Image 1 (cartoon, rainbow, N blue to C red):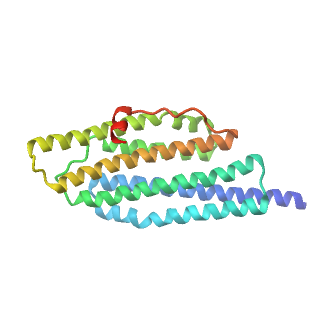
Image 2 (image 1 turned 180 degrees about the horizontal axis):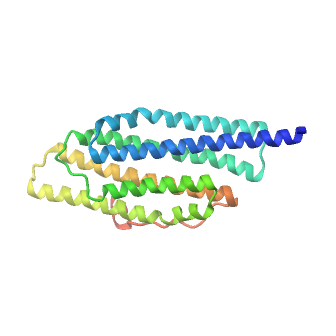
Image 3 (image 1 turned 90 degrees about the vertical axis):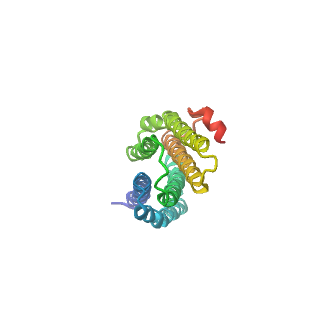
Length: 243
């Protein structure tokens, strides 16, 4: 192998290692989200606490990816496609870290909800959580295969998750209203629990938003251009009311 071939091979190894780190971080983010939703639906405090305890691992993954990317740029001075790929991976890591934060937040609120078993989780919360998990899984699959079409599908279907968010919010607000009518002096703890459910719903909406952000980055990595059209949104009525 001559020196030029060695440099190319070494550079390819650097990029492959960076990709592996992003994939590992994506797997951890998916696992955290799945665990948080399982804890919520089962009111499982022990699982929720494990999710919270593992959150620093995602932070460390992000730092490792940033350090690796900076090292590649400093040593290899990548151009065009390679530079887009390195830069995009840093942005993807940032979104995965935020998805992990939302999983942690869901777990924290689950611990509060578990203390009040009489408060009912909205009927469609499970479907919303499954949709958010599927979105993250699909976008990371598109990253693995460098499949621009699959990334586009994730981007196009964001409105479906928004519609579920709106439906769950209506269920929470309706339950709060009915309880207040039946019991005007509603217990403050029950109101707090309903607030936690609303925040969990918004957390899952933001998970979907970050998954679509990743989809946009993947398309940028593959095409060299950013999307200029607004992404399809759903649930407009409830979204505008909820801010």
